[in-house]
Amino acid sequence: MSIDFLRTLAKCRAPLTLTDPEDINKLLVLRAAGLVVAMTLRPVAGGCEVARFLALTPDGRSALDLAGGHPPHQAEAAMPLAMEQAQ
Image 1: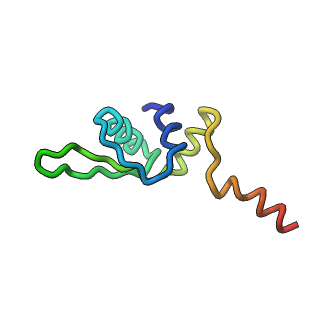
Image 2: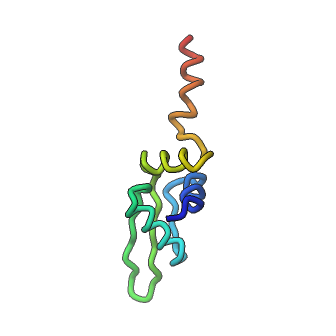
């Protein structure tokens, strides 16, 4: 499993379509580990395999926290602002 690839996905806007076979394999490993929500699309005759990254799972966010430094989840990033406005 590549924490670097997970970190890269965390910085991308979802959904993200992947066509590179190496990236698709990395995505499938992360999905099997329960760190991302992703799907694969069957290629049409003669087409290439396509995968789509949809989201990080809570376990994926935790893995990034443990590995050190990742972009905060949108809800977490907005929380301090919402708390300031409530006061």
